[in-house]
Amino acid sequence: MIELGQIQELAVVEHSDFGVYLANLPYEEEFCEKVLLPNAEVPEGINLGDMLKVFIYKDTKDRIVATIKQPLLTVGSVNILKVVEVTDIGAFLDWGLLKDLLLPFKEQLGKVKVGESYVVGLYVDKTNRLCATMKVYNMLKSHSPYEINKTVRGIVYQISDEFGIFVAVDGKYHGLIPKREIYQNYTLGEWIDVRIVKIRDDGKLELSVRKQINGQIEVDARKILSTLRNTNGFLELNDKSSPMEIKLQLNMSKASFKRAVGRLLKEGAIEFTQNGIKSRI
Image 1: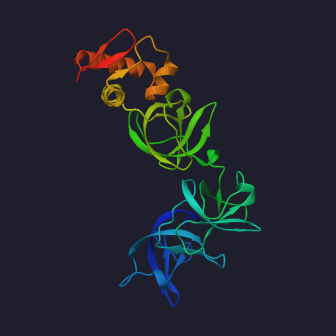
Image 2 (image 1 turned 45 degrees about the vertical axis):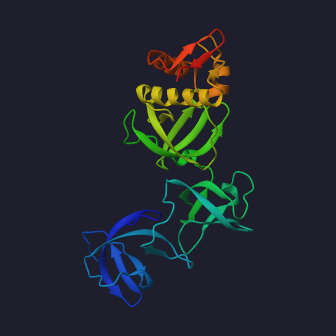
């Protein structure tokens, strides 16, 4: 089956004056669907039976065609696209193909502007057209191939004061950095490295930007030493400091602070004073 909005590997099954026709194998002319790859995109020396990786979409005349160009989006995935035009029917986005992608007004979350970029997904509408949407939560998949503690890439698509940072892992799987795990600011459309902490019963991923404990202790310890160097060797924090004080000064949890301080004390790099910690190096 030739799928609109997806990248597929298809075989050359017919030459024509307009290009070459592609289809899935095994090919039976009477029963198999085929799609045109226009002359302008046909590689030199192509032969019947050769396999080509192509994207299936509709051209400016609303005909289903293939292209060897790789779009920035496929159906069910999420990415950041720039608005190139706003018209009476919606906004048009640059997604790497000759024909720009429509973002209908009903799929927008607020007014969009030319030149600005937004997190969107790709879907097939009721008229069998490819369109963009800013409502990406329900487009993402719940069951990913990853394991706990795997580090992956994800795109920030929603920021919630109640729940945390919603991330589309690899642009297509549900992920959340819980509020308790957030120690810095993020922006919509930002690609970040995250670690899978938990796979929920529904398949959705709980994430963290922090490494596993042993590796994170090293990172946090270096951060404390760096901060001490910038504060003349003294930091007004200790194990009795509140989580809020620690977060404001170091952007880390109290538990992480205590683990890192314990490492530095053991190594003799710092010492406790009455009011805080002091560098010894």
